Every structure is written in structure tokens, then in C-alpha cells.
Image (cartoon, rainbow, N blue to C red; front, top):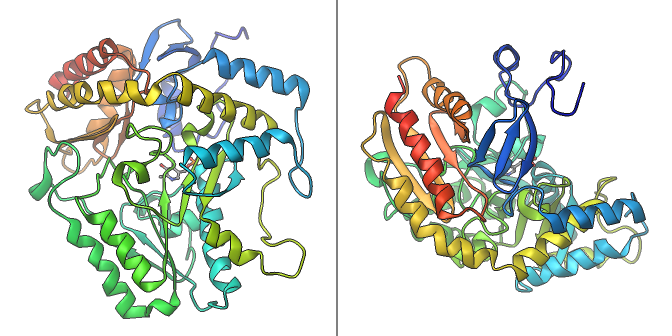
Amino acid sequence: MTPNSSPADLSAFWMPFTANRDFKEAPRLLASASGVYYKDVNGRQILDGTAGLWCVPLGHAQPKIVKAVQDMVAKLDFAPTFQMGHPAAFELAERLKQYTNNRFSKVFYTNSGSESVDTALKMALAYHRARGDGTRTRLIGRERGYHGVGFGGISVGGISGNRKTFGSLLTGVDHMPHTHNLEKNAYTKGQPEWGGHLADELERIVALHDASNIAAVIVEPVAGSTGILVPPKGYLKRLRELCTKHGILLIFDEVITGFGRLTTPFAFDYFDVEPDMVTTAKGLTNGVVPMGAVFVKQHIYDAFMDWPTGIELFHGYTYSGHPLACAAGLASLDIFENDGILEHAKGIAGYWEDAVHSLKGLPHVVDIRTIGLIAGIELASIAGKPGARAFDAFKQAFNDGILIRTTGDIIALSPPLVFEKSHIDELIGKLSGILQTLD
Ligand SMILES: Cc1ncc(COP(=O)(O)O)c(C=O)c1O
């Protein structure tokens, strides 16, 4: 097999979150990537409207990241971080701390968003216990939330398909209602006016269980995987107030919103709401080497440091702080800080918003929502076949040379932050054509 040719047999790879039988009948195989384009195995260019899986904000094959990873693999291919370390892991943690504007002083490395979520949930439980508040064990998530695929993440997550076949999950979990409401908020640009009061549902859960039993609330500031749910005005601030009032930790899952997606470093900057912990992954290494990180407030770390001596948190991954990931993370931060990435993203966000909202009125479109460089385009479902219409659009898009993502009947767009206006025109122009001919 040459690097660009299709493999003869696709059967052995059990593909994640994929309709395997459908895919293997008509595979979509990517061979290379550069800038904001992929090439498939037939040499066709495909414009990346989703930054890979939200994880390539700086564009593909970014030369400085490629070089940093190449240099590191030749120098230090692997180093344990249990009871020892290597300089890049400490350097990256310090740089990440600074990138949060020193709001978070500790960084715990993982390899993915799912691991970041499980890490944060475990930290929340252990934190309360370390403070002598060990009855605080309940975890609160939200309907339609996505927090990865670990048992912790699917338990606090609120997507039925991700939960229903996996048994009893974690016990002691409650869910707040989601904030999606087409009747009130359809076609909103930015944050919807209606729905801030839904944060008060936390009071209902507190009244039921008593705050002394609740450890943490976890939410995505902007929910991505259930189709771009933008928080209503006032919602996140109210959640913060209630968590503070009841001594409950607030965790923001910023796996997709971290690293510039909303044109600020993090969503907590954009919404001006400070959680106690932040889970990150995707943009951290520009997708080049898997890595996640949990950002933690000093007071949480301090609670663990009262042990007389020894290991304070019995948790970690073999590849926590992998040298190649650290090299990719440091190079990515250099680019974020030196190449005006967020300024560029801010500069095109208005154009993006207008372009996406120009799709209003096309067949089957029932809502469009945008924030930062994110867009959700909701389609009416075909009766009895939820998700089928958007999935047809996805397949058609791939054939037409654009990569979009769909969840249910919602098209989710999250282009690399280095998109130019011409790329927006290409993406939205082709998508418009597809929507006009979709059954
Ligand atoms: C908000 C959120 N949390 C967690 C995850 C899981 O990340 P991973 O797939 O890296 O485990 C995702 C993935 O899309 C996500 O969007």
C-alpha cells in the first residue's frame, strides 16, 4: 500500500462513533492535511469546516508545531511523570497557568477530554473528603451535556444514546434541564435572551438532596456535541452564584471552547464567569499529539497538601505530560500568543455570523445559532428517521469538498481559527447549495 492509496481491507478497525457498515460500503479516507484543507486518498481537496474534531484551531501541519514535535521525539521520546519529570512538562504547565491569566494555578495532564472530565470529577470528590466534607459525593450534570465517554463523563452527561447501553453508570448523579428552546430563542446571534432562570433548577436539586451531599456541578459553557447550545444571558453567572452559595464546586468543561473558539482564550473569559476547575483537551496541542489538562484553583490544590507526607492524589496516566504533547502544546501557545490568532478570529467572527445566518429560509432549516467561531444549523427531521437528513448533508458535503459535522439533525461548524473570509464563503456557499437540494 502506498501512503495515499486505500487499504485493501477496512474490516479490522472498529471505528469509534461511526456507522461501521455504512462507512465501509462507501469509505471517506483522508490522506493528508495542510492549512485549512484535507486531501482524500483520491487527491481531492476538502475544506475543513470543523477543525478536525474541533481540535485544530491553528490549521493543519503548522510548521512550528511539526518542527517542535520532530525535535522532541529525537531528544526525549518518553519520560515518566510519576515521581519524576521532564522540563517541558513544567514549562507548559507554567505557560498554561499564564494563559489563564493566572486565574488557575495548577495544571493536571491527561490525554483526552474524557480523561480530563473523569480527573476533575475525582478531584472534586477527593477535595471535599480532604476537607472533612466527605458527605459531598453527588455530581450534577445537565441534560444534553456531553463530557466524553468515560463512566464519569457519561454519567454526568445527558445524551441518551451515550448512556442507555452501559448499565447503571455512576450512582448519585442528577441532571439540570438543558437550555434549548426553539420557540423562545430560534435564530439568536450570540447569547439568547430567554432561559437564564433555568440555572435556578440547581436550587431544586439542592432542596432535594441538601447541599451537604453535593460535590460539584459540571457544564459545558457552550454545549457542542448536542448541537451548539449557547448559554442564555445570565445563566452561567447565576450558576456560579448558586454554587458559591452552597459550597459546590463548579467545573466548566472547556474541551471544545478552550483555546480560542469563542475568540477569547477560554469561555470563562468570554462569559466572565470563573469556575473552580476547567477541563480542556482539543486545542491544547492543535490536535497533533493527544493531550488534555485540568486547570485547578489554588484552594483546591491546597486542600490536598495537608497530608503529612506522600502522594496527595492517587490518580494519573502513564502518558500524563508526554514529551511530544508538551512540545506541541508549547509551540501552539507560542503561535496563539505571537501570531495574533485571537485578534484574527475576532476580526472574522462578525463575517462568520452573517454568513451562517444567511442560510435562514433554506429548505428544512429551523434554527441557526452562532457564537465566536461556532455555528449550529438545525434541520427539521424526517419523520421516523431522526438524524438522517443531516447525515445526508454530511455525506453530500464530503463529496462536494467540505467537511461538516452533524449531531442528530444539527449541523455543527467549528472552522480553524485561521480561516479567511474566502474560506467562509467557500464553506457556506457549498453548504447553501447542499441544503437547497437536500431531500
Ligand atoms: C465538552 C466535551 N467534553 C469532553 C469531550 C471528550 O473529549 P475526548 O473525545 O478527547 O475524550 C468532548 C469531545 O468532543 C467534548 O466536546
